[in-house]
Image 1 (cartoon, rainbow, N blue to C red):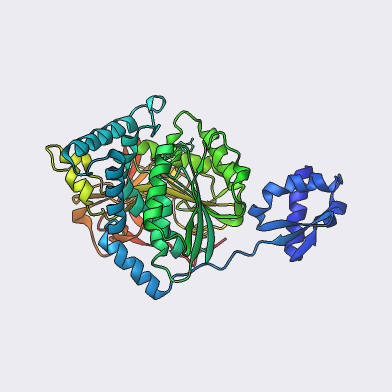
Image 2: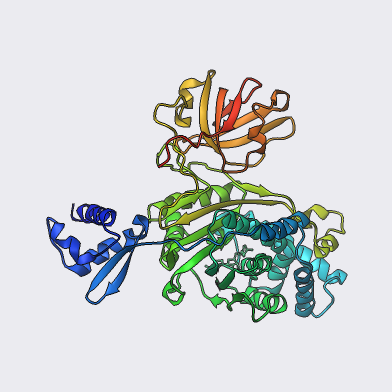
Length: 502
Ligand SMILES: C[S@@+](CC[C@H](N)C(=O)[O-])C[C@H]1O[C@@H](n2cnc3c(N)ncnc32)[C@H](O)[C@@H]1O
């Protein structure tokens, strides 16, 4: 009762006053308590209420968080970024530095057939390891070749993927003019280098990037590439990584008021940890965030890693973080993300010279990695959400959790498009979610049913909220999922954003 009353008093005070002292709320409490106790109870709740505390003498002043002005890209900056993404190529200087680093490490030309064969073996070993059961994965990056294989095979795709994610943050107004960024599990500096590259096409934005990495070999590659590519003085400063293990490190050594924390493909490398331990690591790092800071988690798109990441975001909500995107709970329900396999896609990258050389062999497909598919989530402490749409009160839409009662019938639904193409040219399939279903739901559009009234399902971007009118409900026993048949009689339209916003 004490805590509940305290929080509602805090909400009340903040609604009527732009700033007040914490001591002012004590007389309103049925069970008055010392100021320090009040402070310790409210501290974790403050960002979620859009408030922050400033120590003032013996008291604390409570003020509203005023989010920093977003760094919005100018038309020129947009067109530079667009041109870069159209190229789909790793920047030439970076590709060249990776080759030079391999040459330096192995003491022979990177394209010497013996070295190329060793790189091939390292790539295959790494992929085999990836697909092992969690407790059998090695993931140590102790040997030089494991990092060289990473540079050849994974680096280009993850680098370009980071660019797409940064573009999304920019579009959403989540970048600031001057940012402190932390990259957790940075490997050879994929994310910091991608940020430096992205910022090189901006005119005025600045960033200081910190990172954490436990592998010495990765840190060596990181340092080499950073020094080769990023000017020592410039608008982006990349600090040397903190060599540490995130399972045991003291996060208070990190800067406070971090604007953006990125976990890129790193949380799946804690396979022995439970969901709760991983959530705890993210939550503890999030304590270093600025009140209007952002957390970006991205993981590979395969079913196991993507579904685990989604469950992690749900666990993080219980630890005081809020999902900003891509999920949107349009019925105001609490989602448990059961079997939620959702991922975003971007155009495939061009082969690097190194990848092309590796692929000069019989089973070339093993050494080519160009597809960009990733699962991501953005979380914040201040509770802002990308989409504020809520299904209007008396609407004629059926919750996806009620589909089992309507198998064989035609219905209307509203939901987010939560995947890229999962089908093929003959039958298009997309994951749909409205935050209520416990069983996966897919919209299925056979190509011969495509019309101008329903083709929005094909072109709408990932995360769009759509209304589907007149879809036929089918149960797919083999996959324990519901398919909503989009036929030529179905109308697909953007969600009515005039609907109730909250
Ligand atoms: C797959 S790599 C991802 C590298 C980079 N972030 C990217 O997206 O390409 C995962 C990285 O996390 C690091 N890592 C794994 N477990 C870690 C831990 N417990 N503490 C610190 N770093 C860790 C690994 O050493 C590795 O460099």
